[in-house]
Amino acid sequence: MNKIIEEFCEYYEQLSLDSLSELDRIYSESAVFEDPVDRIQGLDEIRSYFNGMLENVTYCQFDIEEVLDTDNQAFLTWNMKFSHPKLNRGRETIVPGTSHIKFDKAIYYQRDYYDLGGMIYEKIPVLSFIVRKIKKRMAS
Image (cartoon, rainbow, N blue to C red; front, side, top):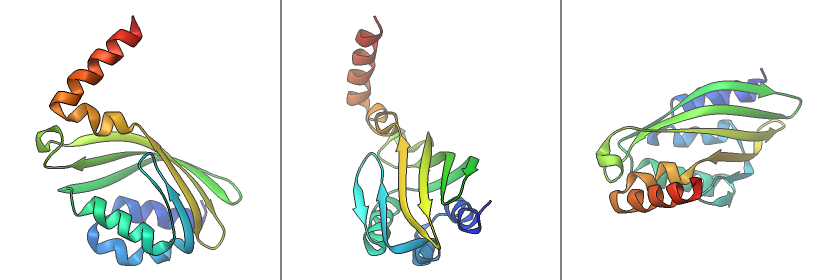
């Protein structure tokens, strides 16, 4: 496995507010980060985005399951485990996802794929009822 991908996996498995100062170990200064919520560019913007996410959760942990590492890109599957006081009554939520990463000396592109509806909408009581009804109608 490429060294930058090893560092990426180690970093995300220990992700915390305290570790945000170390983002420059794995991301380039002009890196692009995309997920179902936003598309941002630049190390400072990525740090700010993660800071906003992490300061609102009780904890957030990534369990990297598989890594497919080729020349200058990698694909990873993972489970994000987190607890947010306003979602799922503060209980742990597990969200499976994948990341597509492009790198040279550092990561310059990352796109994360995960089910935002399962992560948020289905954990809010009123919205979860509506989402279940919509899914039921689509399935029949």
